[in-house]
Length: 117
Length: 117
DNA sequence: CACATCTACAACCATCACGTTGCAGATTAC
DNA sequence: GTAATCTGCAACGTGATGGTTGTAGATGTG
Image (cartoon, rainbow over all chains, first blue to last red; front, side, top):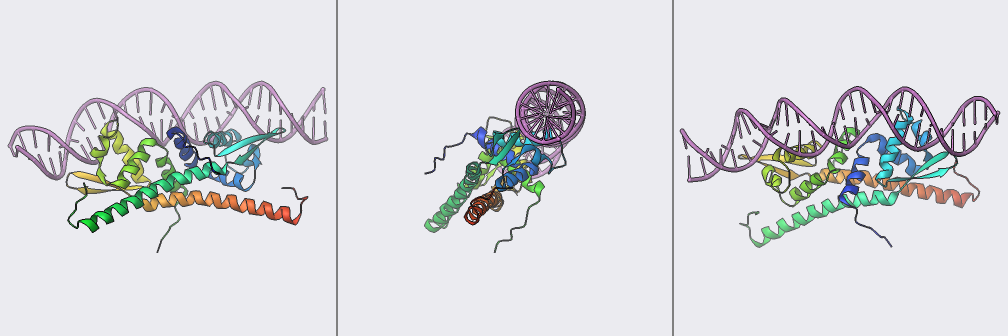
């Protein structure tokens, strides 16, 4: 059973903001394929470790990844449920679109002289 | 037939950035339901018209909406194809996730003593 | 024409985003 | 114990964001 709590607007802001950066999208893809430490991630990018730490922090604040300490390492893993939520938000726009198409088609069928508004 | 050109990383950045604001998501939902002018949109929000103009500009730069001049009005309409692209990008993450699950299941089936890396 | 409306754009300001360097704490290896 | 590694955090600079006000052009209305 899926819980599917409704995220707040601020949470949605954080999710899309987190996805609006190529480095963060790449980090997300990497940790989906395999859980790995922050410093292991940092070696993949041409930027300092604190920079990568911040990116992971943004993803974590958005709920898209989680961290689990293992000795001195901090292993980052994906939270795919959260990604699914983002996708469903976009689905909702498409639902609106299809509803509009349906409404326009219905109006045209009922009254060919109908104007929108 | 769907063309489905691959958007650049910078374009993807713009798309998600545009979606990372509640006002812009609301504007997008409104213009999906009905094409409307910039000033009509502005009356819906507790902010100045130039602020709404900028939001529309961000959505337009991301390709999520388009503008069409009609007399002195500038009517804003949605570009649902672009929204679909964003949703497909998120689908890709879920594909990665399922692939990982499948790989782990296969490894476990082949060799129960297998360790990841 | 005179006037109101819709839009565009520039200038400005406060805040946030994204990178840096430097320092300190915790853990593992030798 | 000593050294190396992994992490966290603060301070800082630069550029982008998100809002404002003000001015001006283009279009429709009386």
